[in-house]
Amino acid sequence: MAEQSDDKDVGGIAADRLRSIIERIERLEEERKSLADDIKDIYAEAKSAGFDVKVVRQVVRLRKQEPAEVEEQETLLDLYRRALGM
Image (cartoon, rainbow, N blue to C red; front, side, top):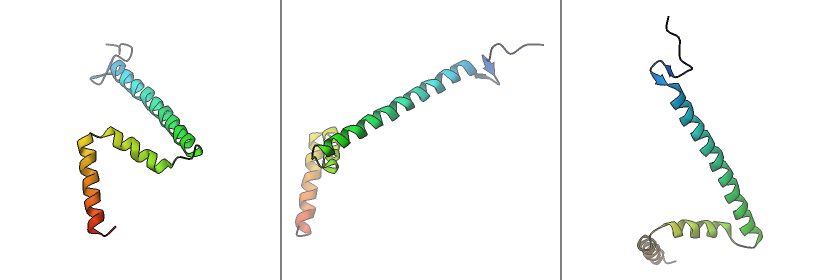
């Protein structure tokens, strides 16, 4: 009878490769949680320093965008405000 060789191939699946992939994902998930906690702490620091966290989040989001995209959004926002008499 042929023995299973150390979990190498189970049902046509390379178990070692699968385990490696799963473990890498788990490590990255842990890192992501740690980073999210760090970001939360920084927003708390901003709040305690008197900054409006909602506005800080908007600035962070805007900085990720291309300048032309930001300008287009601001133009549309201005247009919509004027149309509503704001």
